[in-house]
Amino acid sequence: MNPDKKKQLEEILQYHFRDESLLEQAVTHVSYANEEYKDLSRSNERLEFLGDAVLELVTSHFLYERMETPEGILSRTRAGLVCEESLAKTAVRYGLGQFLLLSHGMERTSGRTQPAILEDLVESLFGAVYLDGGLEEARKVITRMVLAEWREDMPFKDYKTVLQEILQGEQEQIPEYVLVSESGPPHKRVFTSEVRWNGKTYGIGTGSTKKEAEQQAARIALPKAREKECS
Image (cartoon, rainbow, N blue to C red; front, side, top):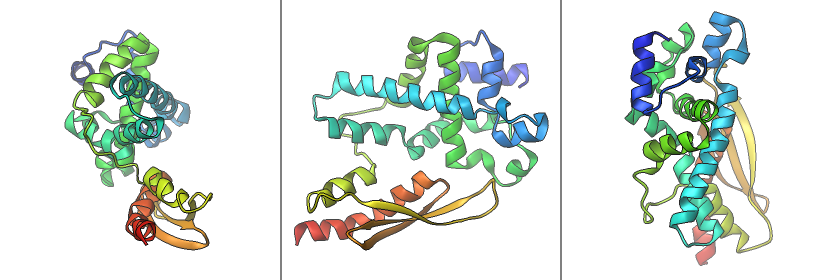
């Protein structure tokens, strides 16, 4: 990463890195690490894994202090704040996609705008801040970039949780998600999942990740589940 880009990204994060290699790793997509370094360990995948956990902890603490509600509502609210859609919007709002290091193939296939890649980028940056400056510095960055606009009356979009609550009210049986197909090139996979309950398919969804496909299947299944609940 050139010095100007590094400075610009630090200004967006409002955090100055002591270990600049962490910042560069956070913006290095696996495709670039493979193409340029021939070393996948230099990608941001491990930082994304860590940043996901840090984000969940910070968000959980944030909501615990502000919402006197049951655990289920806290979980659903957190899920809405840290889901792919929310984090991708954060990346777009702050223009983070421009800092990604991508392979030539990913550049040609609009990798900078793919929600799953943007989600991983955001989580990787949070992981890098945590390793470089500790939990408190990560909390400041996450609170400002993700949590600052939170309101207690904001809707959540964790469709899987909502569907499970509706259907479990009928029987002691949870919905089952089945991956029915996987297509597309390695850098642009399309997953299709079904949600099944009591031997019947309630919804089919697609997405760029298995998690997104399951959420879409649950979203599509909700009207049918609600009809059953009211019948």
